Image 1 (spheres, rainbow, N blue to C red):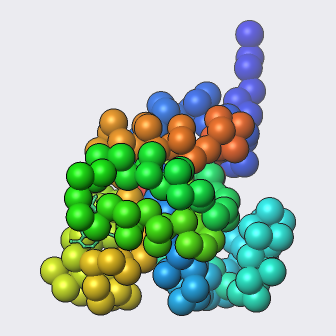
Image 2 (image 1 turned 30 degrees about the vertical axis):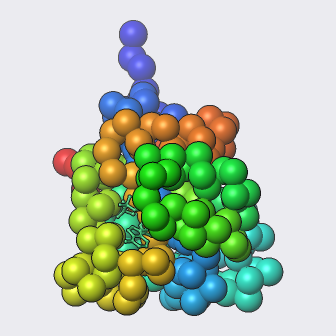
Length: 196
Ligand code: ADP
C-alpha cells in the first residue's frame, strides 16, 4: 500500500529516521554566565524558543545567543536540552566525585555551586570527543587559540565550561543533570546536509 512518508522537518521523534545519536553533557560555569558568555549574538533561534527567552530575559541578555552555544551549533551539533540552575554544593561534589582526592576539589565545588550554571545536552556524531576539542585543554594557558577556553579564559580555576570526558561520564552526567522528559529528540532541516 502506498505510504506517504511524513516530512522530516520538525518531527518530534528523530528515531524514525536517524539512529540515536551520541550525546554529551556541557555546562557553562558561573564565571561564563557572569561574564556574559552565555548569550552573545543576535540569533533567530532564541527568538523562536520561548523557553530560552524566558530563561534568558531575566539575565538581560535576551535576543542574543551564546558565544559558546553558537560554536556547538555552527559545527552541526544539536541542542537537545538546556536549563539554568544553581547546583547545590552536594550536587557539585557528586558531579566531580572522580576528583575528590584533589587539593582543589573543595574550591572547585564551592565555585561551581556559587551561581547560575547553564546545563546543556548536545547531540551528534562524535560529539563527546569533538566537544572536548571545541572546549580546549583543561588549563586555558595550554588551550589552543580557536578553542573556547583558549579564546575566552585565562586560568584553570576559571575555565568557563565543562564537557563530559567520555561515554561513561556523558551518560552519568546527563542522567544526573536532566530528567529524561527534559530532553527532546527532533530532526531539523540541516540534518541531511550535515550527515548526508
Ligand atoms: P576538565 O574540566 O578539562 O575535564 P578535569 O576533569 O581534570 O578537567 O578537572 C575538572 C575541573 O577542575 C577543571 O575544569 C577545572 O575547573 C578544575 N581544575 C582542574 N585542575 C585544577 C587545578 N590544578 N587547580 C584548580 N582547579 C583545577
